[in-house]
Length: 75
Image 1 (cartoon, helix red, strand yellow):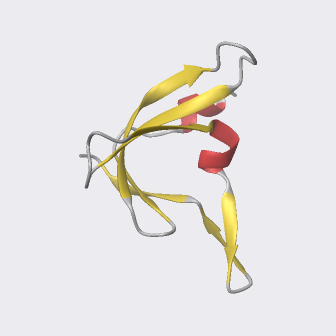
Image 2 (cartoon, one colour):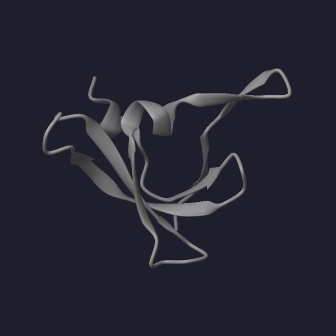
Image 3 (cartoon, helix red, strand yellow):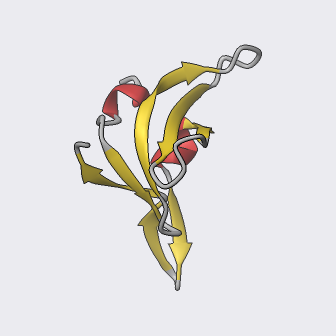
């Protein structure tokens, strides 16, 4: 299954607290790696790209796994 298809459109919260709107998916021009494009809600001029595996991945906080980005819902 294409991992990018599993990303729901809407708002996500980063584990550090920032909120972002999912913009779309892209491919890195040199490596063809799948990327997620997302935009800061607090500063819309900031548009970020992150490898899909990292976006969908988890982090360890106080010994417990947590999603790097948590889906909050549609815009």
